Length: 308
Image 1 (cartoon, rainbow, N blue to C red):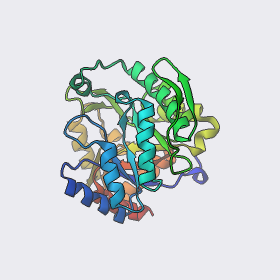
Image 2: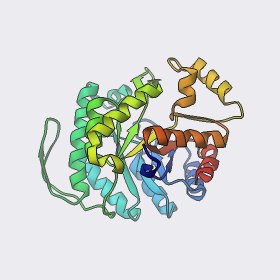
Image 3: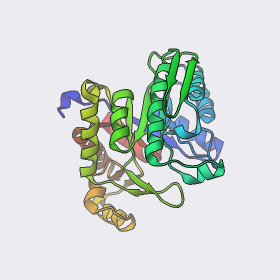
Image 4: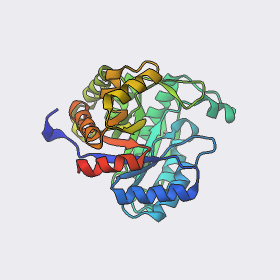
């Protein structure tokens, strides 16, 4: 990838704070520190309802964009998602970005008395939802009959911004290819099978695997490639003067992770602030990853300032 095709970096912070006051403090800090997007996840447990808490943060902030990383597509019909999302886009002055995923936590389905379908079925359902949502968010009337959804003469209020971005968190050739053709951004998870706690995963952070995923996206995207944004959620930011030692410690604790993978993968940010900045630049040069999200805003803020 030539330097002329580099996308400008964007940085997001995913909010996990349980206390509302701390949540709002971190949102203010993120805006002042130069982050681009405030992000909230979506888990049916003691966490915040994502769209409601983002509406609260919209009133608190002025510049920073607001997004979901990511809504569980399986738990909502796309027509209802579109209605809530366009409302939030108007409330925020056109600052909302929609992130969607196929769902993965079996405990959430059990809590609702619902069966969790196979990954293949959930990903197919997600792909249909993206097509419906794209048309609805653009103000179109939708008539759609698919394997998983139906929408008949469906309409919602058009989004406030001309083109409300959709990010798809994708893993697997078919859904990556669909996202490359229909989404604005693709969230690369680097995660494998969900562990019994419902939140943790086996990691799949080998650089060669990311090479393969990006090749799939680039091939499917065709002329859209230069307009696609690739995103990663950094699972750990560790600021240290001893980068290799920190990588060795992480590799010893995380099954399947090698030291070389820990040093290369964009899903970890290890080293001094300057080394982390170089790591992000390397990830953009190799894979085209330009949208970096993390949970540790204070650790990442100096890196943002350094890159810019």
